[in-house]
Image (cartoon, rainbow, N blue to C red; front, side):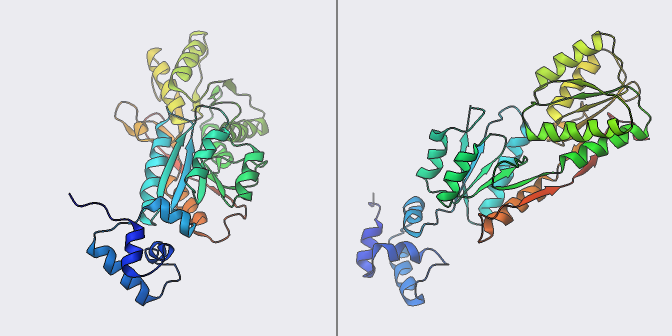
Length: 328
């Protein structure tokens, strides 16, 4: 079996420095065409492929993007991770994924990103302290929040316009003259739930109409159990808004168990438009997050030279009507 050749040996055979070998494989580096050809010819002869991590340390361009995520149960974030991996690959980037079990990302978890010299970090549903953001920016590692925002953090963010979306859902319910309306929330301390509740509730406050609220946590089990208890207590809502699709699917299961007719007795709307929402047994009406646009906008920020300038991008999305609403 032929021994794998090292970059040091390629440098020796091409009569260049080891750093020149690394730069020769980077089309954007300042290496003359003649030198690049000489290095690549030797590399091809010996079937040499550069070590991406080692090259990143030399060129300071690892082509690695860190993604930190906390949520395991919501399929939305698996779709997010899959789309980021696919789209970043088109631009020559690889993904370094870190799953955090903590509400707030810990120092040792962020250290993994430092260790591999990532060029930027995308944070989905995990929390990052302002002190940690400052440390990362000082190390020239920009942070982008995805599908959430935090005005206290000085970093980029790309998210749905949750207030606009929830007000649109409220307007839909209001136009249908529903009098008994229920909001089944997500986790109280998340920006997505805060904004969705604010948009939905503030709309009805302006109409002097009170809504019922169940405090859930973005999980199917919690939404199902709490909605079932609410219905068994004799409550009869005309319409229910679940803070995300997983929540709304839990609501849907509880409503079915109570033998209520959907959508004649009660209409249900979710938020996200995950693949499960369109399954034949669900056919959930939902607010569709423009996921591909959101991912593309995030990558557009990554490709800009000035990554440390804070941008806050909000994208509106739209209704995806299915069978849990009558759409009349």
